[in-house]
Amino acid sequence: MSEAIRAHLRALGGQVAALSPAAVEPLASAIEAAWAADRTVFIAGNGGSAATASHFATDLSKTTLADAPGSRGIRAIALTDNAGLLTAWANDRSYEHVFAEQLRNLARRDDLFVAISTSGESNNLIKAAVTAGDCGVHSVAMAPPRSSLARDADILIPIEGETVQIAEDLHHIVCHAVTLHMTAVLAAETTR
Image (spheres, rainbow, N blue to C red):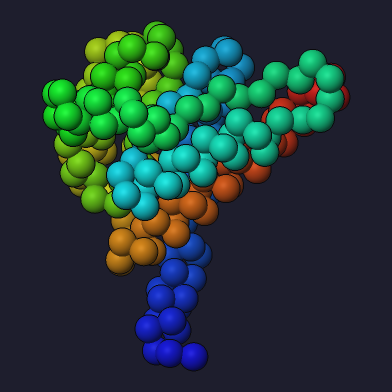
């Protein structure tokens, strides 16, 4: 095995071990509250975090849904998934507006916006978090604790990896943990 692989796995293992369930709980609680109030969860990120946003929206919308007739799932939308709309806003206005303008159009008061970022300095995510606040939408940032995005979000899930790859791995771990939490919540709801 190459030293690069060993080093990555060793570093990731240490950071996973240091990841506190208490640090993840606010995201799980926010999504559970949005679901209970029949609200929509919007998720966004750039690059690898855009793929994570799409993956998380898929997991929340599909994986958590119980098979019981009449069970109500989670409405989760990745703002990264509409290429036509993204490129229209980027071309006609600026890339900084690609998520904010979608939120302004689609989100309703008390919906939830989740921003995923390895740096916490992406202007389009910061603008979206500010726009969320202006629209009465709650916001969560999975980002480094001293970042601009952390400052502009209502809730911070502090993720700061030694490398971009480790930060992205930690984002996936958090998303999967929250998905498992919501799967249990929805399963319990269908047995009532």
